[in-house]
Length: 312
Image 1: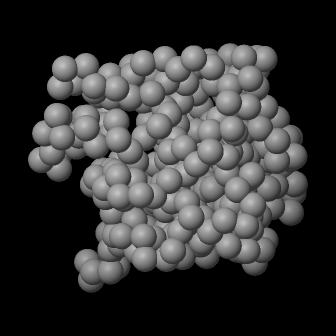
Image 2: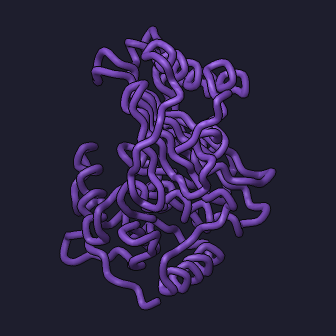
């Protein structure tokens, strides 16, 4: 994988961080630094080896610190891991010495270079049309799938049609990057060096509800924010969207149940909240290119939460 000879720390920080030079090939979706001297890149789903532009671990570590700080993040020995986003890219950085022996970084292109969301089969395009109609009807939609499957890209694509509606997005790392004069992006924050100032996703959901949103969007549901967003959707908020990690459509209910259990919510209570709050659940994967595998809806089976396929 070629790199420009001019790519150096000073260039990166001054721009403030020109990650696009690592992605000259438009088919490259991910770049991983495994230490300063080992680099791999992902092209069309396959990992290949490349040449690192860094000459030393010190140079690479400083590059990571400067890059994270330029995006208002924090990376140091008391906070050795950080994820930040730049224009069209997400950087996850680890500094060496605590949780990893050597500093490392993973950079992902958040969207195709031409802005288009591509699917590998005709069925996915048909299901995309169904989902667009559901967004227009202000249905609440949960998008599930494994890492790298395109959950955020699909959510972004669906929200492109909401026009002048007021949309408030809530994320750990700003990835949705919605365009529009009435879109507001809220991003969580870690505690500072004194251990104060943390703002979690659940706090941001509460703030978002006070911002007169037409649509609430949660980039990824992981913890206590689940209950806050379910309560909001059960009190009249419509047209919401969210994503969640899951390895299959049928494992989505289990993921939700596990998150709720960690907050002391019974499975019966959760099931009733989910059925009332979420209209459609979507499963997307990337086994052979991006595919919308199925669309379903939650239902109660006894006291259990299950997913039933929707007639598309």
